[in-house]
Image 1 (cartoon, rainbow, N blue to C red):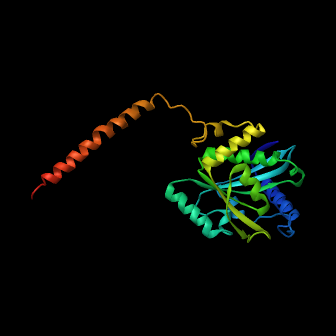
Image 2: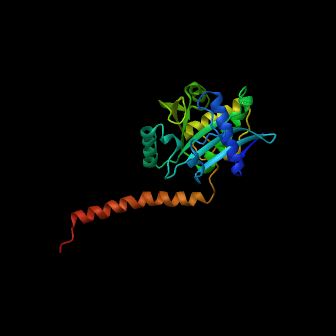
Image 3: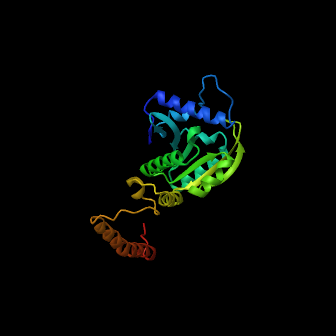
Length: 247
């Protein structure tokens, strides 16, 4: 099984059909005439959205999407406008990069184990590291909250009745550093091979790359500026205060 980005419209339609069948089976929606569920089609067209599919023997058995911060917004804006706006505001103020992970769907034949789900989450972790995402938001049905909270440390924010499906939804949030740490634990316990993106990611909890030898002169110059620059500045200000210029 491999997990990759979709390559054409046909594969996107297959994602819509897989989502429709999964939601219909769980009672979240009513049957659609075309057999597709396109509740967030506008976000699928954004350049900040990556749509991944899990392919096993030429059959799509799972999908997950990630939308990074953009001017249009996130798929969760419809159900949690105030809560998402607060999170986005804090991200902007703190200079952090926010992303939304959504439409985590697997084929009914693959739900007896975690193989597909873990493969999809592995791809999300790789994409998060590649794009330097600091924090993420999710929305899950209440029955899945405990699982994702325990496995990845994603904490619930609030619960509301969804406006797109006939089921309640729970908005969840996780800090990237905490997510990276929890994912490393999952990889260790389940013997999942971590990719170079995750191993060398810049989150403090991840493995840091050794500094280059050329960085040490820069540190020396910065330290010299701090040692001699600030006293000189204070001396100039003090002199100006004691001997003001008269016009």
